[in-house]
Length: 163
Image (cartoon, rainbow, N blue to C red):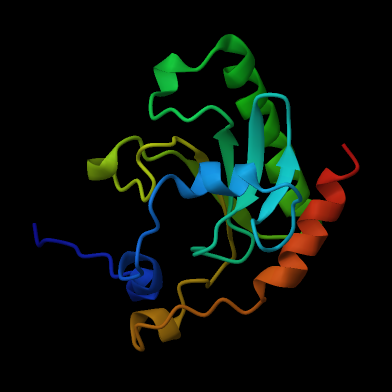
């Protein structure tokens, strides 16, 4: 069987960017107020929801424990319960606000699994649309993210503020 290659050239902005020292999720969490600058749309008791600065698709969110840990099995029962409850809420809010055709949910635990921030585990919620792997990506090696981050942040944050 021939080897398959999945090209993701739009991720080069993240891959090639200068990495800040320390955990970017913890840094965002330390901000006094939430805005499009830190991308946090919701803070719970033990977990928070943040939009991805380098999204795979419009509305790409992450549900993270507040506690800095890379180990799923080290989460407390309260953290585990809130993480899954916030994942459900994130899916509901993404479906309501940006109306994707479907979503991908998943975790990459550890660098070799593809984790961009392996030291702080998180659940990805990536909205998907029929045809979002278009000719631009396949032929032009260019990912089209057609909605700017600011209005997506505002729409999703507005819904989380209702919780």
